[in-house]
Length: 72
Image 1 (cartoon, rainbow, N blue to C red):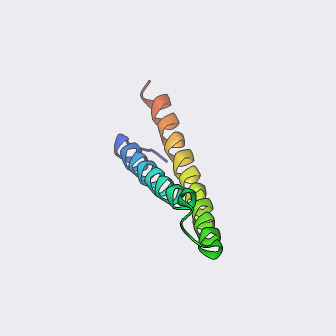
Image 2 (cartoon, rainbow, N blue to C red):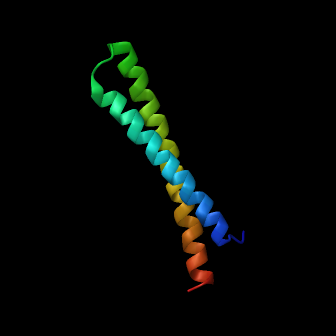
């Protein structure tokens, strides 16, 4: 697939959004002001967001790599 610089910009926006989600969820987990059930739920969401972020990072890096080979 032929990626464009616009694709890379969009991928970076997804990474940035994912980073914000992870940071926010991590702050909820770290806060300690929730009961055990809420903490487990928050930790589950944190894992979910980290997994999504990893996928976004991989896609961004793939796009960047392809663009680097096409436009050295």
